[in-house]
Length: 174
Image 1 (cartoon, one colour):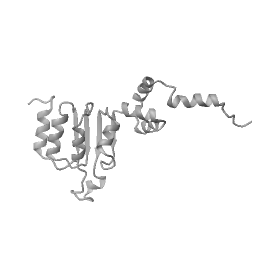
Image 2 (tube, rainbow, N blue to C red):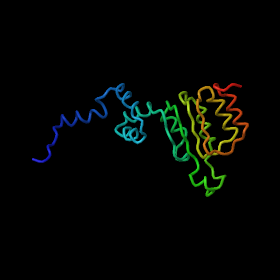
Image 3 (spheres, helix red, strand yellow):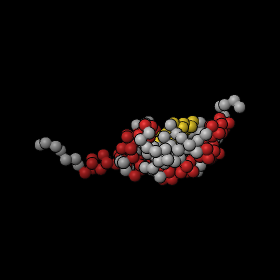
Image 4 (cartoon, helix red, strand yellow):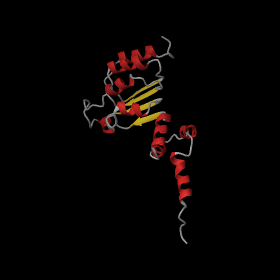
């Protein structure tokens, strides 16, 4: 009469698509084409297997507030990141509504990025406090792999840090 109740066998076949019926290789390929962060997040909630495959295939992560995520946990979850964007102070800081010593320090993230994250090629820091020591540590540990470093509306570093970045750049003529 109205809706038909599916047979148990049909239902189990439909459910097996999500968590067991598709080979890992196929899921890796499909997840590689899902770029929208919200779509990837939704797919990672299907089951533990999809969560694991999302973690292994995710290439870019944006952390909207640097204190909202633990650097060690984020980098352990996404071991093959190629690009990371970190945002620090709220936008109100641009209008002088938040004091300059409010925080959003890059040091904890730089310390973790010095670890074995081999795939990281791009780092974007926005509205964060980045010291010369942070830049030096980043260049020492990631300089050979890092292709792009954006310091957008960041403070705390000097021209010495920029000089160090320029010297380590393989595309620059020194």
